[in-house]
Each structure stands twice: as C-alpha cells, then as structure tokens.
Amino acid sequence: MKVACVACGGTGKQVDDEGWQYKCSVCRGTGLRMEGESTKVLSVDENNRLLD
Ligand SMILES: [Zn+2]
Image 1 (cartoon, rainbow, N blue to C red):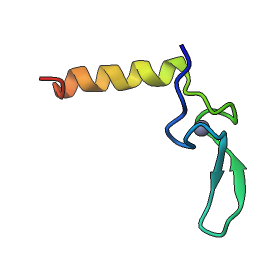
Image 2 (image 1 turned 90 degrees about the vertical axis):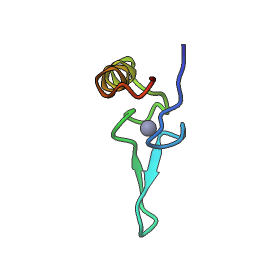
Image 3 (image 1 turned 180 degrees about the horizontal axis):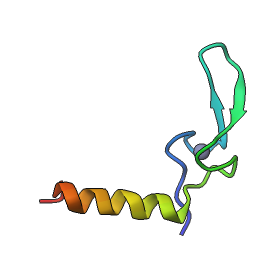
C-alpha cells in the first residue's frame, strides 16, 4: 500500500522560506511515507487514546 508523505505532500521535495528546494528528509525524495513512520503514528494514537 502506498501512502503519500505528509511532510512534502507526495512531491519528494521540500521548499524553505527563501524558495530553495531540498530532497524531502522524511521520505528521502520518494514522496511516499515509510512503513516505519505509520507504525509510530499508530502506537502514539494507542498511548493517547485519541481513537476513543
Ligand atoms: Zn516527503
């Protein structure tokens, strides 16, 4: 399953305030969120009981 990286919106690039473009450090330029990232989010939700 492919999930778009939330840090760069799936573009694989991030732009700073001065307009410089960088390869997204979260997805490493792939535009996709890593499997490990979503696992972290799920565990946080469990601990905070946000789904209740
Ligand atoms: Zn990204």
